[in-house]
Length: 222
Length: 416
Image 1 (cartoon, rainbow over the protein chains, first blue to last red):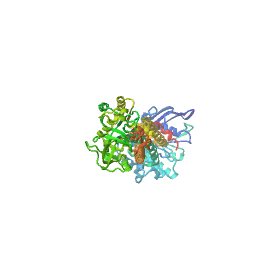
Image 2 (cartoon, helix red, strand yellow; image 1 turned 90 degrees about the vertical axis):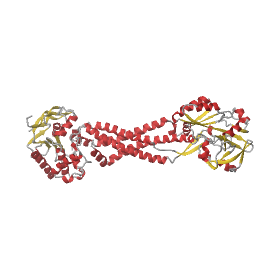
Image 3 (cartoon, rainbow over the protein chains, first blue to last red; image 1 turned 60 degrees about the vertical axis):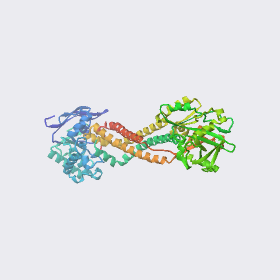
Image 4 (spheres, rainbow over the protein chains, first blue to last red; image 1 turned 90 degrees about the horizontal axis):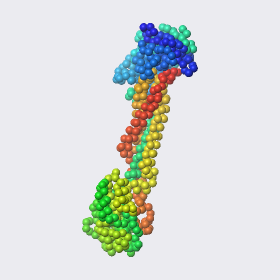
């Protein structure tokens, strides 16, 4: 891990029974870097992203995220660490259906002691950035796919993360909406200096990244 | 715990919320109704005695009179000595005693049920003072009679007439409607206790069966501390011997024979079943609800909610749902209690307490006190039911929350 690395994984393996889905992977991501992890379905990229983000523990290996070794941390330590350092964007948005756009954005702030006005203000700032300032009270069911993903991006940013993990963020969107989302991610990493690790199986989308990591059968091939 | 999130979850997932609330409310209402019914039967069992101002009545059985002429004691009510009454009076927990002297009087032309009553006592048959329908109540020191209204109508007796009991004549000063009060201590003619004593003292047939002296009685109406009823009943049996009949509210409850009246154990068992049903319903519906939200819980954990955050959120949702279920259950129970309060209950009067000679027409028939079942939901039962609902909510939310919070976000968010 270099001095500027925000994330590094060393010799990471993950086994489910006899099946080894990640095989001795080592990688590092610098602060503010936009990295794409590409590979075919089932090659282990989502598992690797889960390990690197602290959602899953590796069978073997070490993960250092923002200077903290996370592979040995407890569930709650990891949750708190994620709350302060990490943002997530998922393929199917994973918004809470009963909460409005701004409440979904503020979801990571709910366990933190602050007033609802403060949470709303912070969420609105981000939704304005996502050009959704007029939709803050709308429920996810009334938003389009692209709007939902922009709400999810705003949620990923609400805690000022050092790194965002995006798992197929355009997977459920049509191509033009997908491109718009990629533009937002690009802008984020350039303007805000947020590191992004994005998993995708679409090589075309990955071209927007600073660096491409290819995976095949659980291993990094290039 | 985030209140906004909780309220929105409950509001927007109305089907889910209503299912949980309705399910649990059925169990809670069942618990309240069962206990209210049981309580109502218990209260109903108090009514026959309460109407006569007593908690316990005491009689002593004796031999059947050899000759049915003149004044005799019913075989279910023979002499209780003055000294025995005084002993009972002194028992701790006894608040007061009313007395009566019940006689069967066989004249050549008719048979009378005559009851000698005290003129002033808040316990016992002198309460008939409030049941006078015509004329007036008995006055001090006067040999006069009250006649039961239905009996007077049957035999064409009017206020101002004179009735002959054995060879003594009594002016009728009023009618009483005994059907308004208890079926205990009902008679055809009511005389001052002193006059009834004179009839008893002068009756050879009566004296031959059961020695009687002025001051003795054959009916006792005892007012006692409620919590001491059972204990005092035993003590009275100890004082008066084997042949005594001590009637308490429990005696009536046993005669009711209803499941609710059978025992505390039945109510307890039924309540436990209702609670278990309520817990199972709450657990099952909420387990289903929470399982549906596995992905949502995964998202919460992914964005930084700790297990404790998740559990406290789920507990708060569960407690609010169960609280609402408790309120709904209470409302259902109140409505049901109102409906059930129109139900009539027939409380059998033990044959020993029936004043009518059993060998006369209708004398062997079972007498009932009919009343509306006094069903109501006491506030402490309502409070307990609401508290129980909240506790079920806390427990269910806690157990299910702890279970679901162990979920790994990567497992539920894995494939989109």
